Amino acid sequence: MKKQPKPRVAFFDFTDCEGCQLQIANMGTTLLELTQLVDIVKFREIMSEEAEDYDIAIIEGAISTDNDVKRIKKIREKAKVLITLGACAAIGGVNGIKNRTSLEIAKQRVYGDMAGSINTINAMPVHKVVNVDYIINGCPVYLPEVISVFKCLLMGKPYVVPNYPVCAECKMNENVCRYEKDEECLGPVTRAGCNSWCINNGNKCYGCRGLLENPPIDAAKDILLKYGLTLEEVLGRFTLYNDSMGEKYDKEFK
Image 1: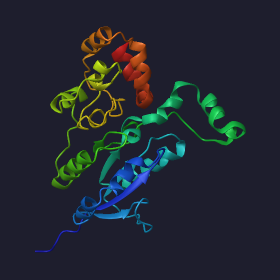
Image 2 (image 1 turned 90 degrees about the vertical axis):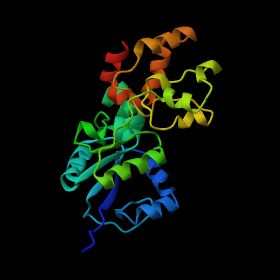
Image 3 (image 1 turned 30 degrees about the vertical axis):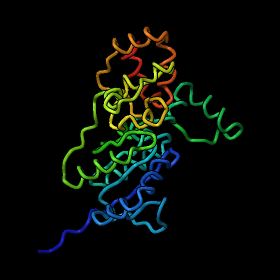
Image 4 (image 1 turned 180 degrees about the vertical axis):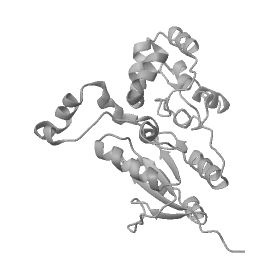
């Protein structure tokens, strides 16, 4: 029987730090095992060669210029499967901070005298422009979830992003609640799937995986009241990653 060719995978970056691709590059032997199942034909972090013939496009970064919009549409036309990698591509990420003010003010603050020559638009997650087949959340991505997504992809199955809070994973990992340590934490309203990675390592949840579909707003407010925090304080933390989805969060919380 003729052996089927391996799917060809290409990585692309838009407005991002490439930290999520660096996570993939640091997979070590697991990455070598993955290359037995797929052909990586474009990946700037690990190889200088590149090809424009690919089946699977993996996108890191938010869409933040008109050129980005044109480019992602061309990639989508060519790719059979498109995967968003990390918070910037999945929910807009920290790039959405510039959406808090007008574009002219944002350009002036960043580029100064060069502001007039800069092409920029409000930061958007990739799914706002093109159809996305698989979503990998996080900043950076959680490697066990990356592997789970690739398994689903290669088996032709959908990957269902968890729609329960990070708190559920925290409890399974027997972590002491960050609120008990006088720290605000966004775990009660943030999608799980990271195995409460940050809290396991002594940090708190910053909401990099985005908001639950139906967040337990009343329960979250009860937590704030119990520990003497205001809604504004927590929302101020939540916008670190989620400003590009502002309308959704305003609707849920206000």
